[in-house]
View 1: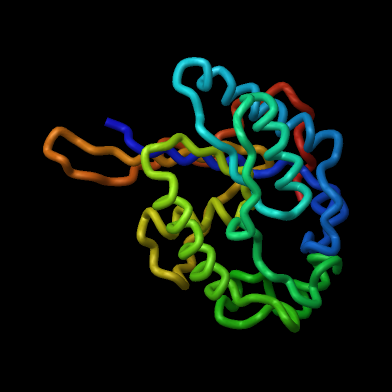
View 2: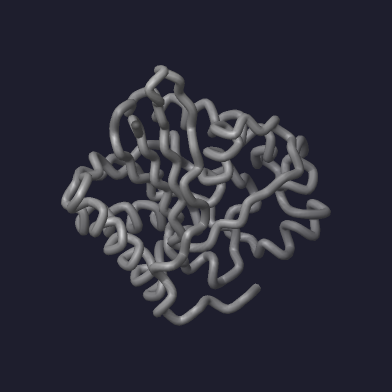
Length: 218
């Protein structure tokens, strides 16, 4: 029996993604036209499930690209949208608004390359972000036991979910791909013996985007 279900929809393509900029709070201006359509396609796919077994609520973090993605999903499913700062992405510090290529060059790699070192003055460390985000996601799961929840999420939140629910040690070099408007699903199962475990049903599912113009490969 499935008790709790967590569906993570990564936000659609944002303008900061197209521009190659670090999309912190100062820089994120929201989705592109393609990003809106990607989010709408994901929402329509979830709507077919919603008719059979309704979702309860959509959660979104505070950045504009998440808010817009969450609004599209909530409006399509006709369920409440709740904004929660615990779903915010990493703190980028002085890197906010700078080109990612320049930030990575200056830091000798991206956030994962040196996970205990900030990638810019005032930024998180990667391991520090994962530790904080895992704690926050665990709180949200506990607050929503027995529900079907949709998260309009950063890719980093998807990684956080896998780190938490697969019990991957913080600092592991393993990684996960996560495309714009992809769907990742976790289900909490309880068997007839009362035994519980989390199961990853799907990761980075983009089937619903097959008819859209593909994003260019970086």
